[in-house]
Length: 94
Image 1 (cartoon, rainbow, N blue to C red):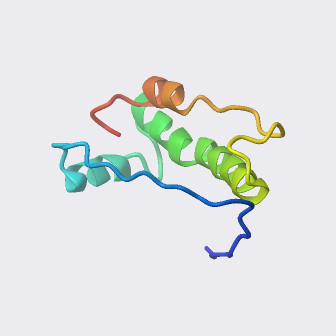
Image 2 (cartoon, one colour; image 1 turned 90 degrees about the vertical axis):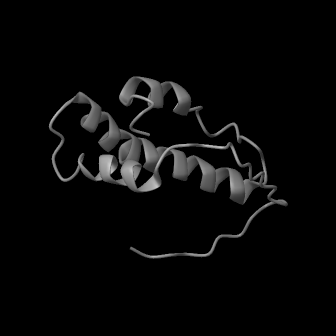
Image 3 (cartoon, rainbow, N blue to C red; image 1 turned 180 degrees about the vertical axis):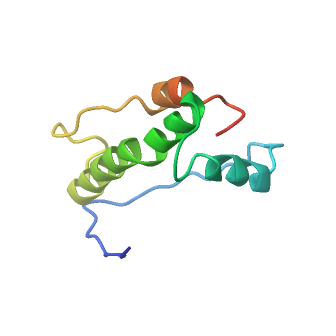
């Protein structure tokens, strides 16, 4: 694993919100760990997809957007992350 600096093409604005979540982070992380190294059901296979190939796509598109300074550069095809999360894993897991 490595960390590489990137040049951003415009100001980056972040919004941080407290959603008053009541889920236990330790429990969530434990549930996520159950999916690795081998998934034992379709939910765990979905978790592997979300944290694997789909995550690689999302990060790649985000890097393009940050470097270009555009919100969503035309060179990126949209990825339906909320839809993928709904089909790959139940809300209680993620």
